[in-house]
Image 1 (cartoon, rainbow, N blue to C red):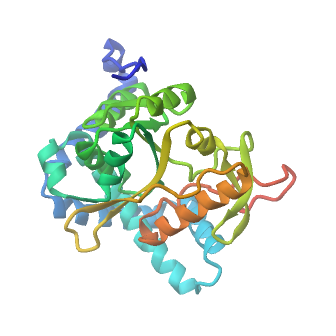
Image 2 (cartoon, one colour):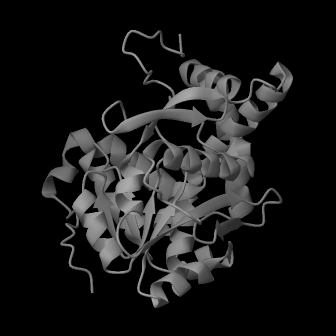
Length: 312
């Protein structure tokens, strides 16, 4: 049994105040749409994504910059194709959030195919905790539910700034999983690993200069990469694996792949270990690159504070 004391966001009377009315409206619309047929939601998401593509010029600039930096060998036409599909998948991701938060387990499980889950149970049977390294694929919300149905997990996440959205987000993401830990609760995740839990950690975003090293990620030589991964991977009796979710291109559902434990990882060389992590992330992203969250400013932190932004 877990020794972590995890706070559950409770409903507050203040959620009924006018400042939350727009949030309530958005949640009601998303909840209502979540019960429509699956393929209808995919189609609606693509349409929404095309609208976002036309309207969100700043985010489009960020995503295209990331693609140009990561894939300099691709032509502009190839990058534009990935970009447009990426925005369609971004629209779909909104509706996948509703599915992930409110669908019953049986409906989620029907859409999931999980391979490699035995790697988790084998490691746990040997007395190990499991550190699952993932990335911000756009289908993450619903795939987190699917993975949890198969093997309830501890999820490291960023709480929402809007308290009402945090109430729904926490409840939705916590369904089918063991519990949630805020992104600063390092000791909590270490305790979970010690309790032989399977823990999901996403090391693929720019978390700033503090506790980061600059190592290659795709074609960007100096990418701020969190050293937090190594804090958890070096926990005694912890096995590190990759968890790779994707939406099937035929619209049939989702595939979640669990890799075997990473061999000879971690070592005593921080830089080489983080290069290894980024290489594993690259391979995972390349499975379906248009489904990755390119909208994040992955390269905003530069080696020197005086370096010019790559997004200008």
